[in-house]
Length: 212
Image (tube, rainbow, N blue to C red):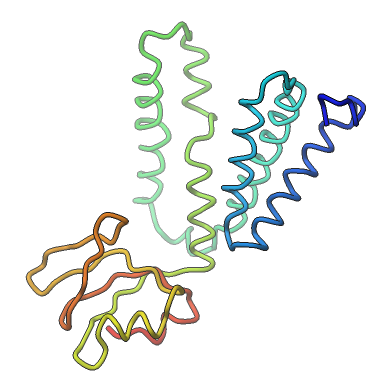
């Protein structure tokens, strides 16, 4: 649309946002949780297109990123329950160590040899967000999934486990009777036998019925 000038310049940002939301929604409708991958692939394609001016869209992206990250921090903080206050001074000590020791040390090591002065390094150590995506994803898993252990028996073997939960349960690890831990991956697919323990990711509605 930009090359053929179908849209005026002042509508490029709005059209880009609408296109991203449309692709995300359509992809999720076709395959669950595929929207993020679809819009990421679309962004890579646009960024590598020739003769396509996207600087204006990049500036708009920075504004959206700042806004969404700010909102995400507020949402995550609002999800902290009152029980967090009962964790005691040990939790406060861990928080102090992460914020005042580990984080500044990590920033200092990462910026060795750079042209950043101590003021900029202090700002990075103080407020620069890190791990916010991981925190958001972990919050989603906390809402929709739970990790549970299932002990396989002669009457409830691995085939019965897969038949009962199908794709709703995602096996992560398998622990054999000797204590050897096997990891489920694309390269290795363990075949657990009776007596093994499965550690799986399950929807909360199904966790109460797991064999332990």
